[in-house]
Length: 241
Image (cartoon, rainbow, N blue to C red):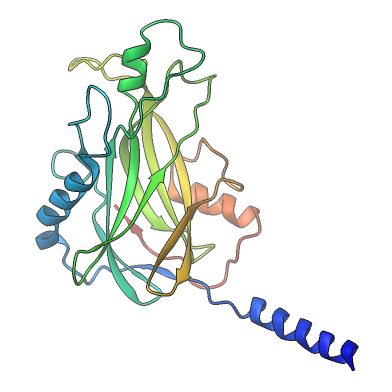
């Protein structure tokens, strides 16, 4: 009798595991985000101001597409609920670089990290903040990473619960001069969305794409996800630009 009950319980648990819902992320092109941009920028700066550090802690930039081609403010539906996205860059820490031997203060203070903010589209309440971590490749960088731009944001296509963000970054050891444009590197990060009651759970996953990587387009990252064996059912979603 105990054996039968144990088998029944195991089967029930297995069924529960298999039937766990998956989040579905969809770009919502029907929603007008323009009126929400000014309050979103104010909310992001209010959030980041006490968290930013270093000599450039007041430099909190929201990538809104106003001054250049970089835009990250879009409407999305995550498992049916609408959110507004925005990516901002600032310096969240000034941790020393162990192998630095010259110009170290500049290298540490000019390090920036891009963060994905998601807001409830109805209330503009902040739903989540996710740091977009770019690992330091010592063959490319003398200093730390300086996240500079967002190239594209899109659903992975091959995995409908995953968002892809293509970022441009440079070496924090490079000088910041008006007439000097430092070499830019490009990488794409994959964010996995898990449905949670009353909220969002987002995790950056580097196991397939690697970090950093050389994927300069959403299409290239999607192709790699398919090669990794991601779920390819369902149509490929449009890209936000």
